[in-house]
Structure formats: C-alpha cells, structure tokens
Length: 308
Image (tube, rainbow, N blue to C red; front, side):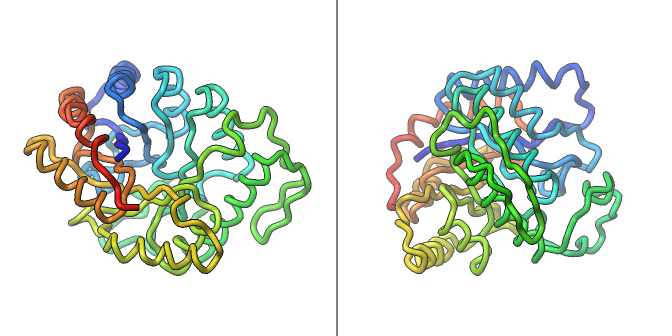
C-alpha cells in the first residue's frame, strides 16, 4: 500500500517567518522517509474539520506545492483537492503543468466539485467561508459538477497538445495552448475526489486515474468503502473501463498519541477492501514529532497487500 501525507495548515499563533522553514523540514523528512505522496488542501480559510478557527494560518495551495517541489526530490505532489470553482481551468492547468515541469514530473492533479452544499450549514457564518469571504463566485453544487467535467475535458485536451477551441457550457477557450507541456506523458495522473455515486464515481470511471474516498468518522465524511468501490466497478463496466487501471485512494485520520500497530492494522483492513493508497493526517496540524511517528510505520504500510 502507498502512504501519503496530507497537510492542512498551521496552528494558531504560528509566526509567518516560521512557516517556510517548518514546511521545508516536514517535506524533506517525508521525502527521505519514503512516503509516496505529499498533499495540500485547496482552501483559503481554515475549515471546521481541522478543529481550528477560520483565522488559523493557511497558505495558498499551488504556491505551497511549488515551494515543496523545490524542497523535495522524489515524493509525488498534489492538492487534496482543487476546488473546481476557485480557478479558471486554463490557469489551473498551466499551474499544474508548471509544477510538473519544475518538479521533474511528480505532479498529481487532484480535483473535485468543492464543498458538498449549496447553502452554508446551520451556524456557519458566510464571512467564515472562503468563497463568500473573498468574493469568489461559488455556483450551486449541480453546476459545479458540470464544471468539474468540463475542467477534466480541458485538462486532457491541453495535455494532449490540442489547441483547437474548447466550447463548453461554462468555459470557452479560444486557443488552449499549453507550452511547455507536462513532463508526464500522456499527462499527470488525474485524481477525482468524492463519493457521489451518480456523478463523481461515474466521472472517475470515464476519466480518472485515481479516486479518493473518505474514512473520516465523526466529521460527516465517512464512506461505506466496500459499497463505493462496488459502485465504481459497476460504472467501469458500463463505460468499458478496466477497473484495475484506477488507483483507489482514501483520506483517513491517524492518532499520533495512540498505538502505531493499530494504524497499520486499520490500513491493512482498508487494503483488504481494495484501497491501494492511504493519505493520512492527524486531527491537528503536523509537527516534526508527529511526522516521525508516522514515518516509523512506512515500511510496514508498504508491505501491506491490496485486494484490487
């Protein structure tokens, strides 16, 4: 099983001048320890799932990935995951391509429809949600799914080198030029996140190289993984796709104050379901001690089989 590290910001009170050195140390340690992937969140304000307030320090995802590319040598990089509403697709694919080029071909394009709601959950202030706070247009969820499919289409076209105009329902690109193009051929892997059975998993079956499901109990993001994988497999049959070509990934919590053996046992159980790649995070910001705690189990996790 592959093991990734998902990073989500800094503790309240972290001084700005300390952020670059801390990220550098964490990224270099993850690279040296043999982790397979390193991920950032695509948020501008901190989110409730972390247990921190909106004001907790958080850096922009693609700036962080560019920084991490320069601090590492082998670990693969990605955003878990890009919100389709936050960037125009032409600019987004240029950013992903640029980091793929500068990192020597280590970029994964993680993308999704964004927050799974049309209206803010009860008790949440609009000013604490980045889209409203920063004035970013945030279409209804159904439209965001439509945009997600168009973004994936545009990405594949730009990475293929096809400069013909793209004329979609939401995006129109007169000349989707992408020069230089990605180092990875035919393109960086596309990870489509989310567990919606009718739209998201069908889009994964059609275009995704990787899916991402949720193993985050107590947060509202906890999937019946066996069922979701069955749904994905059925969609693959419908569209004529080899289910084995899609890398099955999951986002999951770890407890660095607990027993590392239990973490390995839990990941082994996920592997028995068919999960091939786990992205782990604590329920608090990463620090060096926590990363070292997880790094110690990297060989054990890599030894786990996956029932694909």
